[in-house]
Length: 219
Image 1 (cartoon, helix red, strand yellow):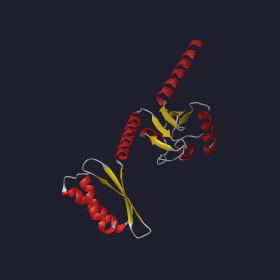
Image 2 (cartoon, rainbow, N blue to C red):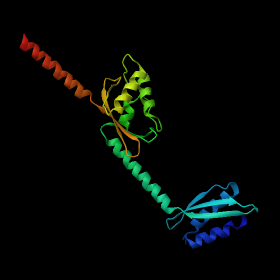
Image 3 (cartoon, rainbow, N blue to C red):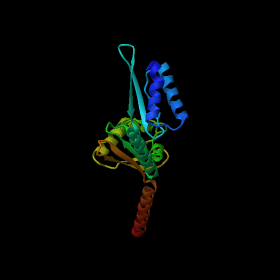
Image 4 (tube, one colour):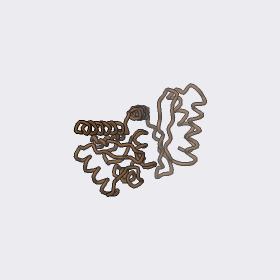
């Protein structure tokens, strides 16, 4: 919008009744700088709280077309969505389990610190697939696979989860976790790792005590 840009911006600021000269000057400076360097869109926040998207395009006659769109509601929805996501992240972090959400493509989208700590170091990242996580954990020795190695371990775990089972995994730090998977209505899945180490130790201790009692009674 070449030489006419100051007039156009002055009209814009008059329509939106910006009370301070600094607001007008800032808007004019931003768009004049944009005019000199590129045709990229720019956003302006007006004094009345509205957000305006300014887009430009060249015409076939050497001129420029300027379109100004009120995107206030769009930005408000984005802020609400981000606030909702942060609330969800806080809730997930407070869960006393390793907790993760996979999207409809089987890619990791949200998780808490407990879930990351139960997997191989550095393996947990946005977009990684479940099978990749399992193989990374088994390959790094985080998940104890037994004599069969990585492939049979990953296959057995996948089969158990597909059958709605709750398979158990032994970690290299001595802990044992139960893996649980629940499909979501959006086509993804929630996966949890529940630490059952103390429970299994207690059960083992009870079995040993019962066996000892049986031996004493039979003696």
